[in-house]
Amino acid sequence: MVKNNDYDNLREEILYSRKAQDTFTMFLYTSVITILGFAFELQNLYLFLLPIIIIVPVAIKVADYRRTIAYIAAYMIVFLENDYNKWETDNFEFSKIYPRKGMEKLIHILENYDAFFLNVVCASVFIGMVVYNIISSNLTNLFLDIILSIIAIFTCVLIFIVTRTYSDYQNLKVLKLSGWLRFNTIKMKEENENE
Image (cartoon, rainbow, N blue to C red):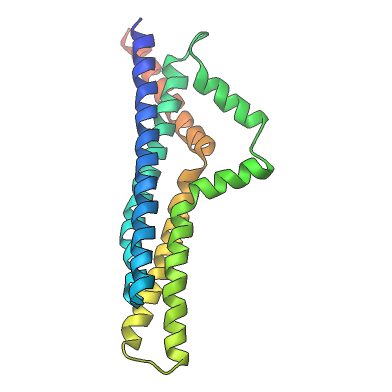
């Protein structure tokens, strides 16, 4: 009974993490689109970088929720699943047999790399406007513009790395699963030595 209760509680935690991830993503879209709207309306070069201040922490938070989901799912596979409750095991096995292909893979990429794509849009518009200002000899803050362009490129790389690391749920689950299996082996060995 305790295992079923733990299983249900952890399933709820996974659902909570998924909903929180969706909430952060909707906040990201809303805030970035709003700020970009103001930036285009006001034609203010620096407002195009403002969304990056939101994108980076949200991308990291969403990645952490993905990590949490994989962590919990792997724990459930090792310690809680049985013949009746084995969604995570079955899902894991199914994904190995039938990996994403074609349109399903494209949707997965678009869904998981949204922060990266938004960051690239903001950085590209900013850098494009800096280049336009250089070509048109409007060099008011050239040094600042170049430094901010480098920072914008750096954030694109950072978000790509974070997203790449945490977007593949099944690979994350494999890593966490191997960790939980090692932990379980050590735990069982210690229990056997204490008996």
